[in-house]
Length: 275
Ligand code: ATR
Image 1 (tube, rainbow, N blue to C red):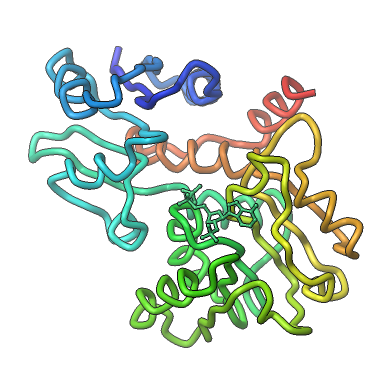
Image 2: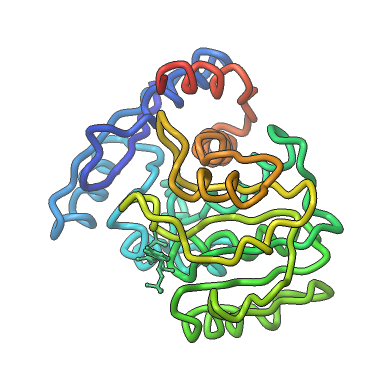
């Protein structure tokens, strides 16, 4: 059996083991996927122990994604753009680091929510690690424009500046929430951590264009504060980040096993366990 694991601190409540177990059962891949709680000062040692024990790959969660980035011998372009690694593969030529978080949100929008990004105006809220990881995959999905807005405007402007050379034909702009004016968007993605404290980013109601989809990278049994605020403000559709979680896992599974699992039944099963 090939061994994989999630490494983080904490990891107890992670859904990743049951998601990967479902993928393995569905595809017939002979693998195990466990949770590993690493001490806060023991990430690298814990990874090395897992490799020594025959481990083939790891997902990396809070707070180790930057340490995983530093540890990798080889980085994918999207890991490089994200500045963080959530997927490690242990191969003969060293440790490979990738980042599947951003592609997870894009695939969830396109494949599960039937919400193509091409030609749409996209508003990304936040300028922390979650926002950073989404930018390159969002640009690659060819929106009409991508605007990054953050409570602290300077951080949004700085983040957008880092992607200047990568944006190609996609207009990439940035501002504070207060500077959004009456600009409207078809897709509004919350990548702030506001929902963790049951708060919604203070954005104008006018950001929601007719038919707009509001998407929160967070999820829970109940709609997040952002999704409630978005519905009230006129968003036509809302979606939480459970699909993103499943899609980033599927992308990691593909990297490790070379097989893309069918995510729909796994998403439905995980949704049922939330209720
Ligand atoms: P993560 O890795 O989850 O992105 P982070 O790097 O700490 O976490 O970034 C948190 C993001 O959430 C930031 O964009 C932060 O805004 P500031 O840069 O202004 O701090 C944003 N954020 C957190 N709480 C928020 C709130 N209540 N309203 C709006 N934005 C919030």
